[in-house]
Length: 435
Ligand code: UGA
Picture 1 (cartoon, rainbow, N blue to C red):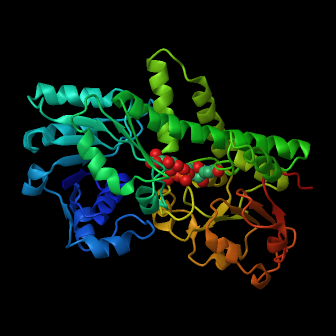
Picture 2: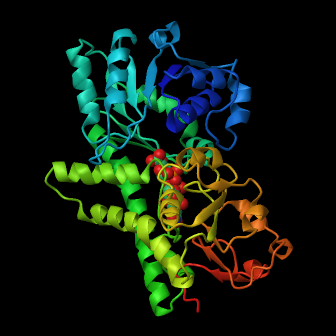
């Protein structure tokens, strides 16, 4: 099957790579020539486990890249995936201009009876609008399918190759056989193909991300309550998670959720609810709670344990990305926290294994260091925000200075008190009382 993918962001690139991995001929398109140039040279433009290795294997075989959407490959493609960005507008709604621009261009060139698969996360009803647009241009022959993606940054290739479900939204049976065939290598005992109507499919994606965000916001509030009353959030989460109706995943307290998906998708769903005069008040509360956590609560916690004025105090941040194993800092809690610290006059120094380049563009005034041991030197306060595996390997006993009287706040409960205390720090985790 000839497959084209429009957009080489996280979703587009991983879709292209994985569909090529199972033997399809795939070409991925992007307007940005620098991205295409790099990918043609087998060099990924995003950091993702196993991506470079896969590009090395597949580029020059059955995977190619192009910035020319008028080329022959696209014109002959049976299935065209659209995976362009749908960023958050100021009012929370999803900005669909890239999507509609792409569809307008594609309508001029794709072959008769082609299948247009919308992979971008889009508001309910978008596929209907795409179909209407195509009809207006005289392309009634094209089938429009909704096929949301559930991969996570950091484990994207694995998530695509071994999904727990593949959701396909269609309005008639015409494209179903082709999609079943395309996805057959991924379907097995632990993954089924769920065929629903397009609006249902579009909502499955938003509702899934909103539900996961709700779990995180919920456990974070319970964690705050634990700190007040002397319970231990680790035990509470474990006890809750043993009930299969609750489930143990996504119950880790932390500095608040970030990334390119949860903040954008919860805002978009809340907006859609308002538009439909069905306010989704639970999701609205989740957004508020998460914002408050990132913009105020992290600093309040620090001030509860460090009562001196923060002006000219050295605060070391461990972890700038919104989670581990990615270089992505979009909506990362570190952004709001560093902004708060700087506004208090603190001197911020930071380490991150992958995210420094991206963070530096937002905060050139922060002092960055690639050597995690160096960020401890002179620090009055250390704050761990991202659970990078290398932080477990820090040799606190070997930290040069004695940090007696200084504090280490672990906003992820990632390290242990015994480990950190070796350098003389006072360790403070979350969701538990510390004197
Ligand atoms: C999320 C979803 O998990 C994917 O299923 C979905 O496909 C993707 O969004 C998307 O819409 O494209 P992702 O944003 O890559 O994936 O990251 P997650 O691993 O879900 O983490 C999101 C945020 O929640 C991070 O800031 C993470 O640190 C935080 N988190 C996660 C917690 O604070 N606690 C947890 O228990 C789990």
